Length: 85
Image (tube, rainbow, N blue to C red):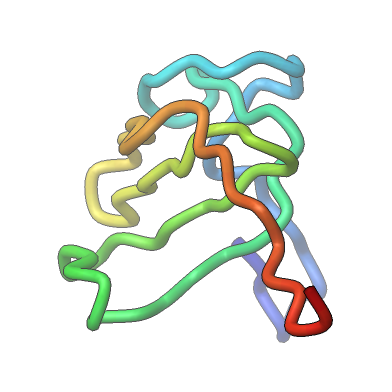
């Protein structure tokens, strides 16, 4: 969480370990988060954000109301689109 007025950044999820573990607040782990997605067309529940990890890692959902981080799907193997093939 970022407080613009005080310039304070607060960790709201993750314990700093490089593993994938569901849980609440600082009792969960994120491995190489790369993107945060806010998109209601993906059926993201209100008060939730999706965290996309690097490579073929899991997609995670963080509920901003409860502080719970859960895994939505593991090991997504996607091939980048190449229009020149």
